[in-house]
Image (cartoon, rainbow over the protein chains, first blue to last red):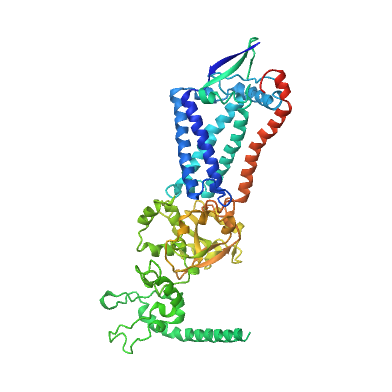
Length: 218
Length: 353
């Protein structure tokens, strides 16, 4: 016998950041596509409009990233707990989760990870978000800022190998983010209903299915 | 056919006359330069009458000869204090003169405002930086950047990478001209185009193109370019590219299509295939060597510091990027496919539709 329980998983500041970030990154990907391939893509009309929008979205994502970092570091003080994989996560957790996504999910077995406010992410999520939030996003912001101010930051550009090195890094990072978006959105549909993981990102509450035999499923 | 023959004969006759007059003009030039080629020469009322003999020798005007323009030098010159008149530029350059006369700039400056007739060269022998320096004599660079910043993103970078005439004349057929620039070790000052002497010391040869063109075939290959760029690191030198028109006009105007960034940035990679390296010469001019086709589009080390958004994108990098995106996209597609096939398993276990 199963019953449903509501868990408050995502506080409002995190939800605001998430959607601001999501909107910003999608805007960056589309405008970035027009900036790189203007002879094929013209979603935002004028080239300059795409550049201005790209720069603005970049600034929004950068500021929201700083706010996210400050919130988890200073207000919630749960950054390490939520995002840093434990030794157990690295030794077995990641493989257990991957085993679920690539095999036992198809056999109808339940998700081995159950979200709680103190442990929102499964080991694979932790490792992925750690790489994205602490390596890829800061890198894409850093290269983006340098490319926005090429002449004033010329010395730094020279030190890092020139404009092409930065453009190449920025472009490949943006491709990684685009790839991540596809995977991220798809994995979010793997809850006990396709929208189960989207709801907590909107109102904060996640509906958990609790088995009376103490077995939880998602 | 007969018409063609007459035109050929006339052309050859004109060419021979020019050659003869040029040869005849050389001794005349020498006579003039004996006095005017000395830096300490002074004209009446502080008038500048010194002519740099090295720079003058490299001009087309030196071939024509001093007396072609200054044709009424008196026998008593310079003792009679008679100031010989000068020919008007339009006497020989009528089409250019007429074109310029109709332009917005004509009321602001005459021909000599920009072109010193004793130093003027064909565009082929001038760097983009030289052109902008002429403009900057009247148009203060700082103010120009400020005025362009109101509508042009990264105006400072654009002004550093384009001769003004690229947008402000009807000039066309753009190519990328790269110059070797340097600055003092440890200096944070702006880079300046390396002088002939600096490059001659680097090349350890009189032919400064040898700093890049190692096999001396007068063609810069991509491999040579990459090698050179690797060597530049840590030397306080860089290869700086500018987009320069090949066909130059004097129709100074503010062209509507230059407000549209896509004029340059959406011209596609095929537009950026043609590039040159401009090597300085002793006489202050430049010699261009052709760079292997498509070098500008090289992924990293062909031109590490030259990139035009949208136009000089690298195809191999695009392919790598597309593979990354495709890998991301393949996960939902493949997983979703098996998810659909195995949906009954999850319904039986009563979770996830």
